Image (cartoon, rainbow, N blue to C red):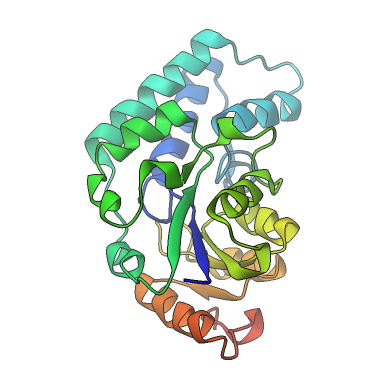
Length: 238
């Protein structure tokens, strides 16, 4: 296998990004009386590690402090919703079973967070081992910096040009670009499949925008054979 697929987890393997965002929105409203617009939600919360969400919000709202008590409530809310409501993206196992590629996960979650998420996704162990999971606390800087993708590639023994990231957030695509990797934008999770968001994905330089795992598999067929990867203009964004 001379190609490595680097999977994001939330919003790509698991339809969970909406759960984490809802916890933040509910907790901000209840504890701080703060409501976010759709653009603010996208820029401050979507596809971002919790520690960076905290940093972003405290910078954005100059008088806001999110202390340990607040963050503990976030952790508890995410764990509750994850353990009760998190489901896999339809068709993801079919893509992950493609043994023409090596597979790993690079997530914005911490090791502890990823561990309890994986209790619901034990089937992934059919395709990769726990040594193939890379979490944000393993690197100095999370996405959109390229650190975690570069760590995954180096650990697995692949050059960046032989890696392709499957993600759902603009930070995934920015990090992949900075790492010298191709990326596929998956917009099949709830709330992502809009013309505006598709265009934002294209603007980051993704090779394709896919609304289903069936479409992802079609793109990977081209990647596996090195035949004319879809570019953003000719992708499933139409």
